[in-house]
Image 1 (spheres, helix red, strand yellow):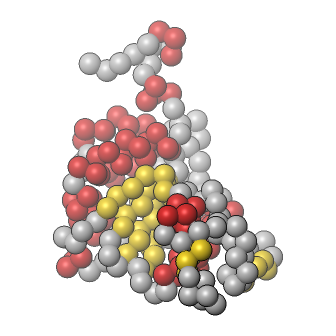
Image 2 (cartoon, one colour):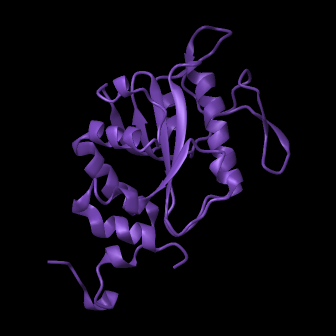
Length: 213
C-alpha cells in the first residue's frame, strides 16, 4: 500500500521531493543488488564505451562519492619530488594544472577540490565511470567545468589507468544542448531504467517528472 500523509496533502514524500540525492540513493540500492546487470544494461544501450568482455569483471557501485577528499586522506597523493605519499588535501605546489573555464578564464588548479562529489560512481580495475544526475534542473556550465576537470585531476592521480568516463542521468523533459552533450559520453533519462528496476518505478517516474516543478 502506498504511504500517504495528510500533512503532505495526502501524498508520500516520494511525490513531493525533487532532490536527486534521494532518487540516486534509491537507485544505488537497486544497482548494488547486482552491479553487473546494471553494467550490462549500460553496455547494451550504448551508454558506456566498455568492451563486452568487461561486463562480468568485478565492479563496485558507490553513492555520493567525495572522491578527492577521501582518496587523498586514506591513500595519499604521490609527490613526484619526494616519491612519498602526502595526505593533505590543500594546496599542492607541483599540481599546477592549467584549466580554461567556460568563461574562457585560464586558471591554475593547485589543489584537489575538497567538496567535489560524484552522484553515483562505478569502479572496476581499469575504469571509473562517473554518473552525474539531475532531476528538476539541467546541467549548468560550472558543473560542466567540474566534469572536464575531473578527467584532468584523476589522470594526475593515476596516469592513464583507470580510464575515466562521465555519463549523465536526467529527466526526459530536459533537452541538453549540443554543447552540454559534448561533455558526456552519453546521457540517459530516469524513465529508461523502469524496466530494469520496476521495484522503484514510482521513484524513477517522480525523478523524471519533476523537471521544472
